[in-house]
Image (cartoon, rainbow, N blue to C red):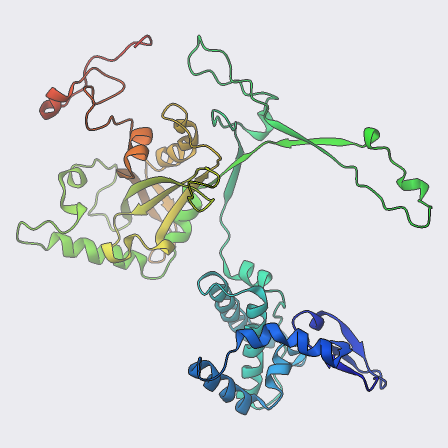
Length: 444
């Protein structure tokens, strides 16, 4: 090692491997002293003086005292993956599996909820391994812990059955991938012209090759006009199956106990106070194919929420785009946890850049409607309290959303409309005696 060069192990240089005169490999890079100061500036900006961050300063001093004077330098290196020796045996692998699962969930929590970067998540992973070694005071069996935070996040987040359905970007008609026509064939009415929107994008496999020293391998001399082409759908509508989500949801520990406990609390109300939707007439008059008294049956009611948002930060001077979300919440849960994100079913993400209108939103809602119709009859699903299976029925009870979402999804008119429904001739004066009126014809 030259006297004028020093070893740097910052976030950029740690990816390199340096071999010293003795043949030992070390993560880092040899740079000048001036470059070392410049590389340390981003790190110093993140850690301010102790007067500004007393808790952070005390934490660093505590970790430095416990892990040694070179703890911060060691924790930023990738050598922490080799802190634990490799040991054969299925028992050791079984013992390390819970630790690996907890570390993966913790790293995913830091990334999603604490908004930490991947570099910070990698440093947190290295800190955990240092703490585990220091706590046991001995060599440990090596954990098969991935070094990339993205791999840890994929391990912690459960996988669901996502459906990617090709769609038309104009009328939002959905097609099967094996039966996808070149152009959209949707007609709003039999007399209207078809949509005729292109449903495929053409991509080229040609990649330009750099010519070095005026020479080029003849095997790569492909003219762009002769390059092979392939077609892909112009867009896909991503949805989640209700069956897969219910099988995961009902396997959660204590979720069925929460439902039954809240149902008993609502039924125990002796006064006339209304504390939940389960006391309403619509809930009580809901028709089911199974009996509520049967312990092996579970009747679930859901609320549907639809809304659109601008991914461009909703600025009037910026781009105006709309992306929608379709989600459902289980009304059997207590109100305190009913709307929590971990218990909400994300049915689909409506693609942009424009929101569908009242006549085309039915195309995007059709996968969810098919899933709800499949659960109209009881379906046997294993649950946490009934591993052998329980008869599950689902119903959609309420629609939640702003005026635009209610008008599009439910077909409701505005508060000042004379006709309350777009499909029949009922007027607002007959609101007190709402019933099915004469249907409108196609010309109307």
